Amino acid sequence: MKKFILLLAVLSITIGAMSQKGKVTSALSYIDQGQLDKAKEAIDQALLDEKSSNWANTFYAKGRLAQSSWESDNPKFKEFYQDPLAEAYTAYQKAMELDPKGQIKKKLLTTMTYSQLASDLYNQGSMQFEAKDFKGSLKSFQTQIEISEGDLYVGAIDTGMYYNAGLAASNSQNYDVAIQYFQRCADMKYMGITPYYQIYEANLGKGDTAKAEATLVELPKLFPDDKTITLQLIDLYIKSGKNAEAQKYIEVAKKDDPSNYTLYFAAGIIYLNEENYDAAIVELQKSIDLNGEVFDTQYGIGAAYINKAAEMFKAANEIMDVKKYSDAVDKANAIYAKALPYMEKAHQLNSTDVYTMRSLQELYYRMKQTDKYNAIKAKLEAAEGK
Image 1 (cartoon, helix red, strand yellow):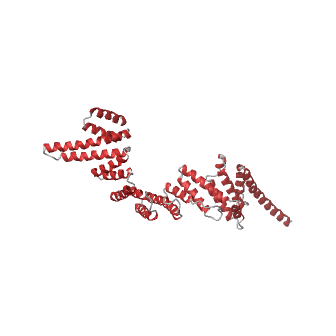
Image 2 (cartoon, one colour):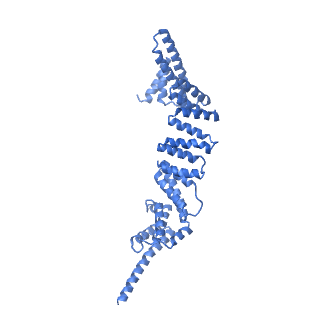
Image 3 (cartoon, one colour):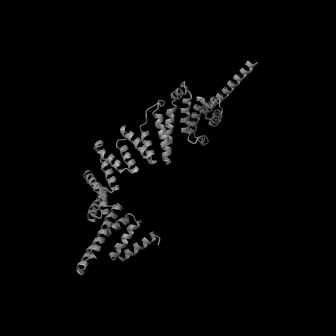
């Protein structure tokens, strides 16, 4: 009698285990048929039952379901998991952990599951990047990299995944991680000089201008024919307030590209900020000669003449001799007059800029051009809501 009872107990356990195994098998069948809701119900039941909650196939089926839910066009299925692809990867890894004989690993390899999962992660990361979810994008690209570097990935390695991860890291302000990925690209000679510029930008993001500068300074040795390096150095030195260094590289760039009006503009603005108005005027005029349709250049040279004239008026006020004072004022007014055509051109190029209108109002007043003064005054007041 005792043996009979024991046999029934064993039979009961076996039948129960087979029942749960059947749910997992059914779930896989439902997935193949696209009936993911039924598959989800079966897998959830299998995961709750102690007899099947630690089966390798249960987690393999969960991985299949999670991945399929992300790939599905049905929005209801996509909501099964908060991060379906991460859920799928975790489930597959758990399945292999519970399968010491390696049957799951063999199945994942022969079905190229991880290759498809890497592709899905690339697509997800790209969509997250477009949506400006840079942290989520970085996570997706990092998982893609982990899978692609593993022994279950079948196919050629996409070098661009390191660059994508670097961009996502940089945009999420995770600059140290960004530098690691961009350096990987540089080591593989992927995209030429571009990864080095990204490393430079990441170092600037960290506030480490010394490393940023060191990155750029080394580039001419690696890319001797690339003229953009000089421009990057100019930009860095201007941002860092190192005007002498900036001007040195501007002169180098002028020799390589003498018709580049932006170089003369940059030199002129540096001189303007240093209150070296005569030098600023010379550089800005050269920029205008090459391209006279740039608002900032027209405004800049106008400002240089106005500031120079203002200094001359200040100096004139120190003169006690009436005749000498009058001559000094006339000279200052002549400089103010030189500013007028540039400010008028600036206003023509950008008719809404209030700073230009204020400058014109002052100039028209000094030049005693009453009609123009009244017109610009009215326009300025309207712009300022007075």
